[in-house]
Image (cartoon, rainbow, N blue to C red; front, side, top):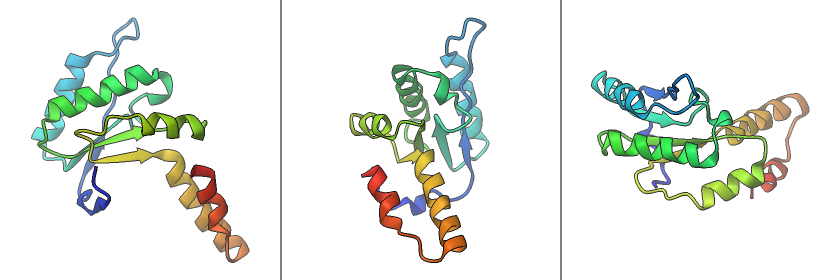
Length: 138
Protein backbone atom coordinates (compact mmCIF):
# COMPACT_ATOMS: atom_id res chain seq x y z
CA UNK A 1 0.00 0.00 0.00
CA UNK A 2 1.15 3.51 -0.74
CA UNK A 3 1.62 6.04 2.07
CA UNK A 4 0.96 9.06 -0.15
CA UNK A 5 -2.70 9.19 -1.13
CA UNK A 6 -2.41 12.04 -3.64
CA UNK A 7 -3.26 9.56 -6.41
CA UNK A 8 -6.85 9.46 -5.10
CA UNK A 9 -8.13 12.35 -7.17
CA UNK A 10 -11.02 12.62 -9.49
CA UNK A 11 -14.11 10.51 -9.16
CA UNK A 12 -14.18 7.57 -6.79
CA UNK A 13 -17.23 5.36 -6.58
CA UNK A 14 -18.34 3.81 -3.31
CA UNK A 15 -19.66 0.48 -4.55
CA UNK A 16 -22.91 -1.02 -3.37
CA UNK A 17 -23.03 -4.68 -2.42
CA UNK A 18 -25.83 -6.47 -4.29
CA UNK A 19 -27.77 -9.24 -2.50
CA UNK A 20 -30.25 -11.89 -3.55
CA UNK A 21 -33.62 -12.45 -1.86
CA UNK A 22 -31.95 -14.66 0.76
CA UNK A 23 -29.37 -12.06 1.72
CA UNK A 24 -26.47 -13.69 -0.10
CA UNK A 25 -23.95 -11.52 -1.92
CA UNK A 26 -24.47 -11.55 -5.69
CA UNK A 27 -20.87 -11.52 -6.89
CA UNK A 28 -21.87 -11.73 -10.56
CA UNK A 29 -23.85 -8.51 -10.18
CA UNK A 30 -20.98 -6.91 -8.25
CA UNK A 31 -18.71 -7.75 -11.19
CA UNK A 32 -21.11 -6.00 -13.57
CA UNK A 33 -21.19 -2.91 -11.33
CA UNK A 34 -17.39 -2.79 -11.18
CA UNK A 35 -17.07 -3.16 -14.95
CA UNK A 36 -19.70 -0.46 -15.50
CA UNK A 37 -17.85 1.96 -13.21
CA UNK A 38 -14.50 1.31 -14.88
CA UNK A 39 -16.01 1.63 -18.38
CA UNK A 40 -17.60 4.90 -17.25
CA UNK A 41 -14.20 6.36 -16.46
CA UNK A 42 -14.09 6.48 -12.66
CA UNK A 43 -10.66 7.05 -11.17
CA UNK A 44 -10.88 4.62 -8.24
CA UNK A 45 -13.28 2.24 -6.47
CA UNK A 46 -14.20 2.12 -2.78
CA UNK A 47 -15.11 -1.39 -1.70
CA UNK A 48 -16.96 -1.67 1.61
CA UNK A 49 -17.46 2.05 2.01
CA UNK A 50 -20.57 3.41 3.65
CA UNK A 51 -22.78 2.25 0.76
CA UNK A 52 -21.33 -1.27 0.73
CA UNK A 53 -23.40 -2.65 3.63
CA UNK A 54 -20.25 -3.33 5.65
CA UNK A 55 -22.12 -2.99 8.94
CA UNK A 56 -24.41 -5.89 8.02
CA UNK A 57 -21.71 -8.29 6.81
CA UNK A 58 -19.35 -10.57 8.67
CA UNK A 59 -15.61 -9.96 8.52
CA UNK A 60 -15.26 -12.89 6.09
CA UNK A 61 -17.99 -11.50 3.83
CA UNK A 62 -16.43 -8.02 3.82
CA UNK A 63 -13.03 -9.48 2.92
CA UNK A 64 -14.57 -11.57 0.12
CA UNK A 65 -16.20 -8.45 -1.37
CA UNK A 66 -12.92 -6.53 -1.18
CA UNK A 67 -10.99 -9.43 -2.75
CA UNK A 68 -13.60 -9.78 -5.49
CA UNK A 69 -13.33 -6.06 -6.24
CA UNK A 70 -9.55 -6.35 -6.50
CA UNK A 71 -9.83 -9.40 -8.78
CA UNK A 72 -12.34 -7.83 -11.16
CA UNK A 73 -10.66 -4.41 -11.29
CA UNK A 74 -7.42 -6.24 -12.17
CA UNK A 75 -5.12 -3.27 -11.41
CA UNK A 76 -6.92 -1.07 -13.95
CA UNK A 77 -7.75 1.52 -11.28
CA UNK A 78 -6.96 1.82 -7.55
CA UNK A 79 -9.13 0.01 -5.01
CA UNK A 80 -9.78 1.55 -1.60
CA UNK A 81 -10.85 -0.92 1.10
CA UNK A 82 -13.33 0.45 3.60
CA UNK A 83 -13.50 -0.50 7.25
CA UNK A 84 -15.98 0.88 9.72
CA UNK A 85 -17.65 0.15 13.01
CA UNK A 86 -17.97 1.24 16.60
CA UNK A 87 -15.28 -0.98 18.10
CA UNK A 88 -11.97 0.68 17.28
CA UNK A 89 -9.88 -2.12 18.78
CA UNK A 90 -11.59 -4.72 16.56
CA UNK A 91 -11.13 -2.51 13.49
CA UNK A 92 -7.43 -2.15 14.21
CA UNK A 93 -7.11 -5.93 14.58
CA UNK A 94 -8.97 -6.51 11.30
CA UNK A 95 -6.75 -4.07 9.44
CA UNK A 96 -3.58 -5.54 10.96
CA UNK A 97 -4.37 -9.04 9.66
CA UNK A 98 -5.56 -7.78 6.28
CA UNK A 99 -3.75 -8.99 3.17
CA UNK A 100 -3.19 -5.61 1.51
CA UNK A 101 -2.14 -6.98 -1.87
CA UNK A 102 -4.11 -5.10 -4.51
CA UNK A 103 -5.38 -2.47 -2.06
CA UNK A 104 -4.26 1.08 -2.79
CA UNK A 105 -5.62 2.67 0.41
CA UNK A 106 -7.73 1.92 3.45
CA UNK A 107 -10.74 4.06 4.27
CA UNK A 108 -11.71 4.03 7.93
CA UNK A 109 -14.77 6.16 8.66
CA UNK A 110 -14.06 6.65 12.38
CA UNK A 111 -10.69 8.25 11.59
CA UNK A 112 -12.36 10.72 9.24
CA UNK A 113 -14.97 11.56 11.87
CA UNK A 114 -12.24 12.04 14.48
CA UNK A 115 -10.44 14.51 12.22
CA UNK A 116 -13.70 16.41 11.81
CA UNK A 117 -14.27 16.41 15.58
CA UNK A 118 -10.75 17.76 16.17
CA UNK A 119 -11.52 20.69 13.85
CA UNK A 120 -14.89 21.36 15.50
CA UNK A 121 -13.45 21.28 19.04
CA UNK A 122 -10.53 23.49 18.01
CA UNK A 123 -12.92 26.02 16.48
CA UNK A 124 -15.22 26.07 19.50
CA UNK A 125 -12.69 25.79 22.31
CA UNK A 126 -9.41 27.08 20.94
CA UNK A 127 -6.44 24.74 20.77
CA UNK A 128 -7.61 21.12 20.90
CA UNK A 129 -5.29 18.49 22.38
CA UNK A 130 -5.10 16.35 19.24
CA UNK A 131 -2.89 13.78 20.92
CA UNK A 132 -5.88 12.44 22.88
CA UNK A 133 -7.66 11.67 19.62
CA UNK A 134 -4.56 10.06 18.14
CA UNK A 135 -3.95 8.00 21.29
CA UNK A 136 -7.36 6.39 20.92
CA UNK A 137 -6.37 4.81 17.60
CA UNK A 138 -2.78 3.96 18.37
